[in-house]
Amino acid sequence: MTLISYIKGDLFQITINAKDAAKRPIILAHACNCRGVWGGGIAYVFKQRFPSAFSLYNAHCNQYSVLPSKLLGTALLVPVNGMDVGYIHGIGEDILIACLFTSDVGDDSDEEIAHYTELAMLDLKKQLENPKLIENRRAQGVLQRSRDKDFLINMPKINAGIFAVPWELTEEALKKSGLACRVFEL
Ligand SMILES: Nc1ncnc2c1ncn2[C@@H]1O[C@H](COP(=O)(O)OP(=O)(O)OC[C@H]2O[C@H](OP(=O)(O)O)[C@H](O)[C@@H]2O)[C@@H](O)[C@H]1O
Image (tube, rainbow, N blue to C red):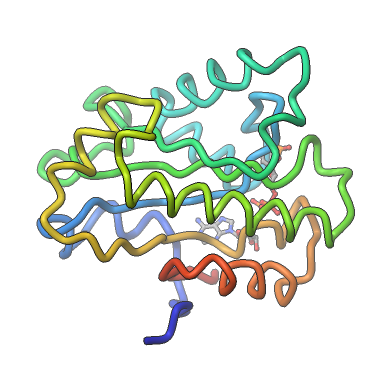
């Protein structure tokens, strides 16, 4: 099975007309810094659409404010809620956002960011396989309710914009994680 597929289009379209939400949660992943900021790029759009998820990400980063780099290579799964503007009733209950901590503040080398991407995806895989490892209780519940355990990670070309990492390096890291990814390209 091809682990990485590509789709032309806006990532957020799938949260508007998701057809497969019934079977499994819609997981939207993006590359995050360790400083609790979704200031630019697609992260800023995530923050506008799902402010409740941003708050959970920001609170998580604050726990590591003494040594933010401890977050590198980890993944945080957070739910969205009915107050979020990007929440679509009937689908929103099954949207999870996967924050992949791939760089502290974006000044890591391309190779380091690709390595942290692989580690973060492996951490995400561990959590998907064993929801008890998921810190957020609501996100845990969404996954435990999922009948289909073949999860698909939807994402933009992470690291390829503000972090300026050549896509081939990130693509290689994603392949090593063994998770099925669907990459949305504008
Ligand atoms: N709706 C959409 N659908 C599909 N693809 C979309 C899209 N919108 C943009 N793209 C593309 O998605 C790729 C990622 O590009 P981005 O520059 O966003 O992210 P990145 O992963 O390189 O970097 C992470 C840092 O960006 C933020 O920055 P701040 O430090 O907060 O300012 C974070 O917080 C991190 O720190 C580029 O190809 C964009 O064309």
